[in-house]
Image (cartoon, rainbow, N blue to C red):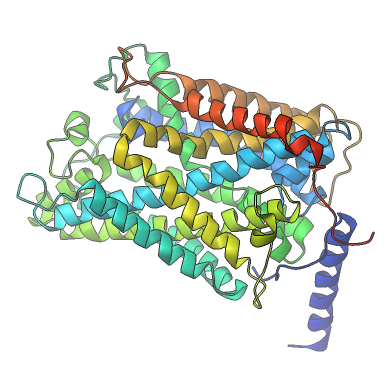
Length: 493
């Protein structure tokens, strides 16, 4: 490497540290780094994906603009503190931070538990399927698989940042290569494929949930896409380990949404092309036990080759992608927890606000693992309770995404000073679209998803989200308002 390149890299690193010092922190982290099918069917999965992605793009653009102005690993709650105004900064920071970190814990729970369930289905199909005497794992076995996945993710995130960077590159490569391979393979193997009209216009109203209004069905069907495109605040939480942070951080946010939109849509179109018998795919009496994607792949390969081995390989590709996603979730959890503890907002903050000799926040990595495991214990008692817990992953995070954007377009409308990445005169318009979209999604997530409403079908999402809000406000009123002042500087400016 030439001397000029080394000098340029050192200058970039110094600039990042200088900007972090301006924001009040010293450098310590090392830089180097079936719902849609049931509700609406193909239309919800293909066209609905594009609609949701367009609005999520507005959320991402607004977040990226703010990220460029305030490149710290605190991310959302730091932004809220800076944009809400001096009087409201501590409360805004407190509420945003707790919605963010609880949402991230729930996101890890959701991703890793879905992987455990997928592995259970792979084992079921590999041993003969539900109708051929295959092994159906109990909820305790699924929880044990889930625990093993969490531990592996904890170990990966205990490695130095260079290794996390490598896993990040692997995840990007695996998703692109996997989607490319599956997009070609799935339609080629299937003997019976849906026509383009079915993929883009067929509307499934036979959901078995007592919902018949098409607008209502489509609205609920959009939630699958909303859940899938989430977690793009990771770039913000890793920003103190990112070079040229005030530019690369925002670009990371935007790129993650753009690539997810493109490759996700291509994959959904390919997958929808083999879902010609929707009622059978959703039936719990099929070989995959009602796991629609697995059954669609298994049926296609079995009809073509007389064996479902190829389907298991495809599911394996998906499983690896989910595994790498879960690892990234722990990475984001730990950096958010580190930053929140740095500002004294978490119980035992001095324990979590520590880095090891590799400059990795090791304690909070394993805190994230432990909390995600405790959250999953609700699956042993009630599936309804577990689904409510997991719902915080989507809605809690999007509320945390929207709060700093809301402050950006209201209290800080005139005082906001943009960074290198900015939206210019379109910033306010894009910001308002993002806020209105999150408000709309909040209402959609609160709607009942089955009628008649009973204890087994009641949507507890409002209860779960309301619980997070009430607990954070109660903690503020009774305790935190006396000492929490928002982000705390650790340098003498």
